Length: 249
Image (cartoon, rainbow, N blue to C red; front, side):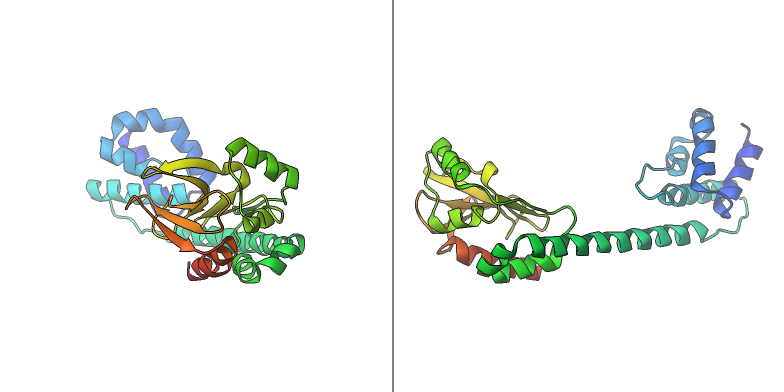
């Protein structure tokens, strides 16, 4: 590899004559030479990044090639081809994600009809924003809930038990996690609570709390290290607080 051959390759890249396969193949064959030939900054700018989209590494390397050619005073005509291919790839990806999202939303509505009956506002809000990565578990069994109460030494309220008989748990990417298997006991400011899950109302990781046999739901802000009453019961939590939160976010 000499400077003349490198310039020819960089011009091919900048002017849009490369493909992801040809660029990666050339880079893998010459990486060691390039690292010793170029300055550290030039090498890092030219190095293709690992990415889920195949055109992004070529696009970022093109910017590095432009930087090197400018330093060498080489004239070129920059191509928008890689940017156009990336936008097309992104658009195709988004279309596929929307199809997956709609399919998951439809499955949610068909498979959790009782959840829609008991918590209509919450369920409708969730159905509109449900992402492929979000999780809605199957209903828990009464024996499973009882065993978990015995394990924790804690009595769940009636409304919380009713919820777990509809679904064992939900994990929503916007910041709501309520999962039977994830419940644990936590002491905060010398008071003992059962952590029902997470609700990112103010910040990531803020908690939903309850006390044994009580319907009241509390909210813990970890940044303020403060526990405050959030609502009177679990029904209000889903139908008022969380449904409003989902619609807003």
